[in-house]
Length: 165
Image (cartoon, rainbow, N blue to C red; front, side):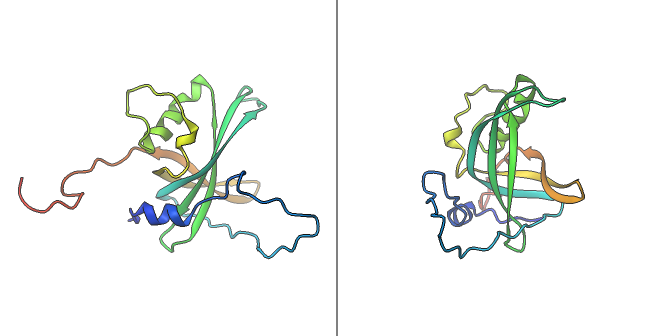
């Protein structure tokens, strides 16, 4: 599946409203917007842009203990130029650090094998690529990020170099 690699126009046209920019509505406000359409993506590799993030707290479950949680909001374009919105959660636990590292590497913020401090303020507007699958839960289908993909190495040929070395 070939994807458009021009993220500048994609990111510019898909900016999320941050909580500070969001205007509060009065109880008698006129609503003109319709519910956003849900776009179910077929399984494949897709480019995405990080729209926003939230810091929160996960209260714990049978499988995962209570911990800090990072939620990222991603915008994914499909071949029909529709935008799918995906929310992905990261549990801030040592046992889950590899998932966070893969996400940061995907965005070009972390180099493989090198430690780094997570700076969530650098996430919005960053682009990456992920393998997306379809997950079914309670009879409904959802877009699911199976894994974040490492950035592809740019070779002179891939960068548009023509000629001889």
